[in-house]
Length: 418
Image 1 (cartoon, rainbow, N blue to C red):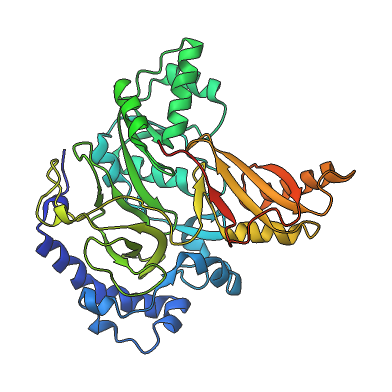
Image 2 (image 1 turned 180 degrees about the horizontal axis):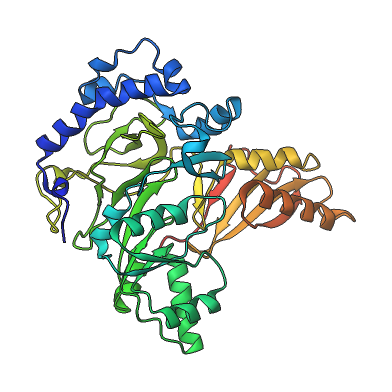
């Protein structure tokens, strides 16, 4: 049910509203943050009144945030509020630090929840991690904004998860799609009833067609939300849409040349760039590193649910070798950092196998003596450094020197996306 009239505006009305606010947001960023005061030096904010004018501004890249923050901790000067005015501070792999202001639903996730069928009074079973990263809090804030109660389940302990669902009877689920499937399969093995879950908003990994159909067979209406820790909700699915994701109402989305600055032609694949109207962390032309494209059908045809905003074709990959493993970003820089921590190895490569959510992460490391007396100790040292750097676990495979191809690849994604 659509309760926010923003979602049914004409493209013209929506564009006029966002562009009317844009000069003020650019000026606010210039005046309120140390970063944009310098980054936008010499730019007349009052002139940024169109998408063409916005496209002339420089891009702030997610891939550069760790370096920006390291030079000026903790947020690189992008923050418009001081620490005492923040609700929470998070750390995502990179490391990249994000902030949450004192307001409610800072990430605007309630819109995606409402679209999939969450409603006031629901108990939301939230299985995103509450440790370090903001995923769980992003979902929790959205649920509270809708009037829902939240159970902070977190990750792991599948038997306990199944038993808790059987006892509490939650109607709604948030987390990765693969973890929901694991819980439900474990419940079936245990003979406990988890059929109370009727709606699910998932994120952090691909919702494959086969997995979507599996949930449908269990009587669960499931949809994906595309969000990042930095800018919050970007786009979301409606259950009535066969394909594509509806762009969030309160952001300006651009699709630009990968690693460039200029917009691509409508319908072409490019890098997702987002401008948010945020008074705490005012990111402008923030390049996510994700690839997508505008669905040209959305220019003339609203979603069957009645929502009229532009739609994108969903997540279509990364501009670099960055990927996600169990909902966590894995960057090429992580691999380089692991190599620096282990000078006794040569070239290394991460190889991902298996399927989404149950993938196996293997670190292949060239060694002068892969079967030597100290090989087990070396494997443990490398394994520990993988955990320290990425917050993920990996098998470590020591191989002969000059075994890995000299192709520049440091993350090989050989997972099945069926």
